[in-house]
Image 1 (tube, rainbow, N blue to C red):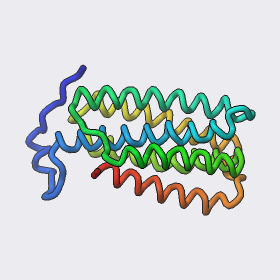
Image 2 (image 1 turned 45 degrees about the vertical axis):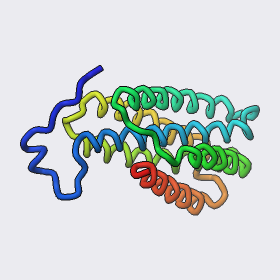
Image 3 (image 1 turned 120 degrees about the vertical axis):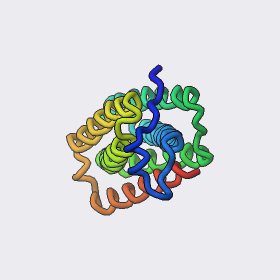
Amino acid sequence: MSQPTHPTESDLQRRLPGDLAPEALVERVIRVDHAGEYGAKRIYEGQLAVLGRKAEGHVIRHMLDQELKHLDAFEKLMVERRARPSVLFPIWHVAGFALGAATALMGPKAAMACTVAVEEVIDEHYRQQMRDLGENEPALTEKIEVFRAEEVEHRDTGLAHGAEQAPGYEMLSGAIKAGSRLAIWLAERF
């Protein structure tokens, strides 16, 4: 387990009033990423409940397996770094499954459109976290980068399986992205 580095003088000079202290930033990163990985797990479980026996089932199962590894890593980090989970965990439990099942009921392409929308937001989110963490948390930043690459792989898988051909793709994608951004904002704070 790598120890966090302490902020340098230049790090402290770059902080603005209202910026989180380095320890608080790390706690927020772990909390929101744990909530997000749990939400992703539930989305894929919802999709599998509907599409598990269809041709797309093995593709969804592979993505779920990766999300379970991400979730496990953040659960361990929560203990190691004494970060608290999101108090909205029951909402992520229900909303994630409902989103996965609802989009799967709309058809396999809509389920893939859900994956693409969520993963595009997560890609942006993880990139911002890596910028925010800077050089102060190299082990955490490296883990986030590995997970980000797998999330981009999920997005690409969704695109390869016809996500953009889903009925109402732009509207569906926009709604899911807005919901994902809201979920991130809430999990960061609560």
